[in-house]
Image (cartoon, rainbow, N blue to C red; front, top):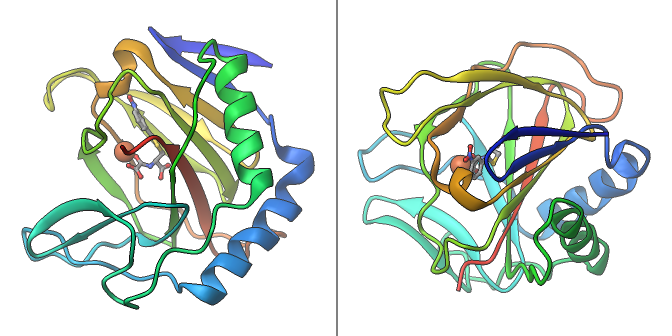
Length: 203
Ligand code: MD5
Ligand code: FE
């Protein structure tokens, strides 16, 4: 079922629950080619979230800044291809939320372990901010913080669980957001982790 969150943001609750195991198998294949890494932010902090990517472009961070690039500077290799099933899922979910014509060229995969968090930030490294971002949650639940257009604005808290898809578009594309520290647990599909896939049009 669809739950409008705010201007341009829609939760498709449990949208991919039935295909979670297949999605997770693809994530494991991607990680076998390009392992999850804890990257260093420009501020010199090691991220608690581990990341990999698939698609033509991948997002990463190092001491120089944030960027999308065609190859991973840790492995020196191109990112694994985006599976057709991933692309179709992202395109379909975007269309269901009112964003037809979405064509993702990047999929960032975040892995959260107990205590891992994402502090409040905006996603603005993509060229065309009129394109939405499609987010898919797998494994352990997490509390998502959905804020305003200033870091200090009040946040709404939303629990994101396995199979939930969120489409962030329109004015909500630039809202501050984050993830509270992951509560420890064991999930039947993902063990001690939460995974989040974000499909993006980077260029
Ligand atoms: C996550 N990932 O659960 C989240 C899901 C990231 C990130 O934030 O940058 O990897 S994506 C949430 C998102 C994207 C774009 C806009 C908004 C939220 N928003 O307006 O709240 O790992
Ligand atoms: Fe983000």
